[in-house]
Image 1 (tube, helix red, strand yellow):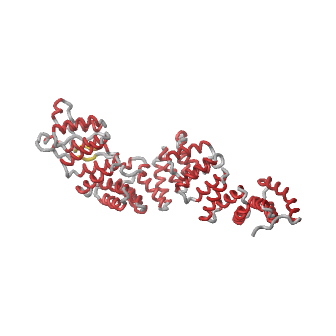
Image 2 (cartoon, rainbow, N blue to C red):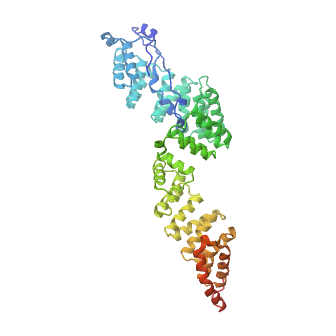
Image 3 (cartoon, one colour):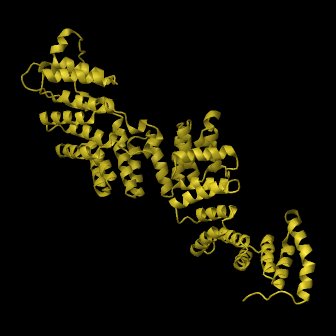
Length: 512
């Protein structure tokens, strides 16, 4: 992007003994609505970085002549610095700005542009010194304070130096939207949400407020936990700029957050029509939102519309497997989940999914994944039950029993916890403790035949023969030869001997 050139007024004054007053401002700024949808998930200060090369003096279209006379003309040297700056040749730009300043020491515009070139070339300390010189020469220059402060805080993460500069910009011009927005983001990062909200509201009350300003206010309101207010701000942004697809994406998410699935689906359909599912990042985000809206069919359609090569990316494969209800049974699916986990190591749901996928084929891996998921969400009963199941698979019964009893204490009617606890106790030969669990399961699901089979064996091992006989008979009454033939054969072999033992008075009474 080309930077503007010097004004006629500046040219006329170039030989004056006093400094020249040039106003620097931004032209042709790239707005957030031109960025990809997933920019809405980044902190709003990144938008400031996208205008880095739009700074220049307000100058007329007088083209600099590269002749020897330029070496004695600070204006021409300044213009040539801008040309190099526009081409991202910061080293050459700094050389020209230095030459202009040497000829005209009181040249705040050249000092400021030089400071920006230094900042863009990662010479922050020298850039700060240059900015301070520009500020000393022109202490009421609100634009310069706002631009330099916003770049420091939002792009270079230098809140310490950025904050006082931004506050000075607002002192000079209380309606400076750029400074208000950048300082709001800075204060939000510092945990001062109240001031951040006040600054955002001041920015949106300015006559210069844009759709982007309202959208950035919504980010602060989300951080404050007020999604209703954030939704109203995004509505305002879309009323100003209906084609802002980033804002529409934000609104779809917020509508889902507040339970407005119908409204969210309208926004998702608009994004879909606009082609934001035509690439991997867009398809991934769109499919996730369709999933949240309960439309897995639409989510799968978006993913399946991608070219074959793009469908093989780990994110797409993992999300598709999840949408299709896959348990990660194939090596390809597990590999996709694991590669996705490298990018999202704190994704508890993904860790638990991998725990489930590896439970039967690699219990140690399964235990590790479930354990990591529990470290992130220690109160999640499903993760705890999965971890216990993996421990049982690895024959660590005592640890599994401890975890499952803790789950049942919190959620007494958790069916899967009872079934896993019964199995852990049974496998560890603690038949006395297993019996109450099997009785609970039988009461909850009386139609299940295998419950009575294990209940009978538990009584049988404790020599409670009459109770064992009752349980065996209930098993036979419910057993299906197609699925329980092995157990049926075992029971039929045991019953004659068991009845004879009871007839002889053998066995023990069930403990009370």
